[in-house]
Amino acid sequence: MARIIVINSGKGGVGKTTTAINLGASLNKLDKEVIIVDANLNTPNVGLQLGAPIVPVTLNHVLKGKANVEDAIYEHASGTKIVPSSLSVKELTKFNTKKIPGIAKELSGLCDYVIIDSAAGFGEEVMAVLEAADEIIIVTNPEMPAVTDALKAVKVARQMGKEINGVVVTRHRSANYEMPLSAIKSMLEAQIIGVVPEDKAVKEALNLRDAVAHTHPRSKVSKKYYEIACKVDGRKVEERKGFLTRLFRG
Image 1 (cartoon, one colour):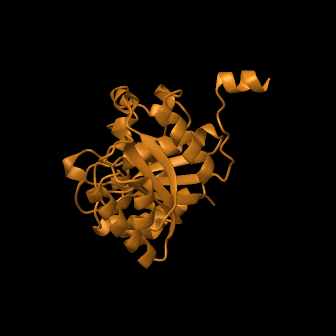
Image 2: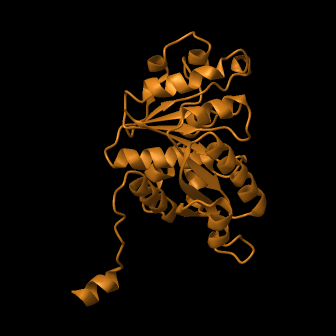
């Protein structure tokens, strides 16, 4: 059975979807079968960011009992699979979020990893997504409001008996006005498994409707997501050596 990993934050706009997509794409590069589920039912972005904004069957249809989850799986050119939610306003009502844990379990029999992109906040759909999780990755920015909301997410997850796999700090600029990583780690009482820098490559990838791991594989942000994927998969992260280091050692 697959590991079901929920990407959560408590706050919107911190990079949950970008992390879900690029973690999934990076795990796929490690030859893992991955299904990314967009469980942000009200403001979904996974399909939009991967070039499939409108599809015939979505997670909304599955939650309404109108389709089987296998019918809502779409394969990206990279091999990564997604289950998108609907962008249609008509599909925003009358879905049963209590079905989400069962759907996640069903998907876990089809792959190595189910990566679920959660909505912000702690509404009914978010609680159902957290219930489905084997483990949770918390995404935050190095700013007090984002970290405070991330702390709420950590507390809610732990109250539910869920494992916090780690914290990913996104849009990091190494600026004096940012919260120190040590303070974030101390406040959340969780290990930081990745620090993703602010990078225009992310916005360029968004315009290209693809994961930055695909469009800019040599970028700093792509390398960071690959390292996070290695950690999640239990692989040793290889230290990258510069040309001069290799030359002198030679």
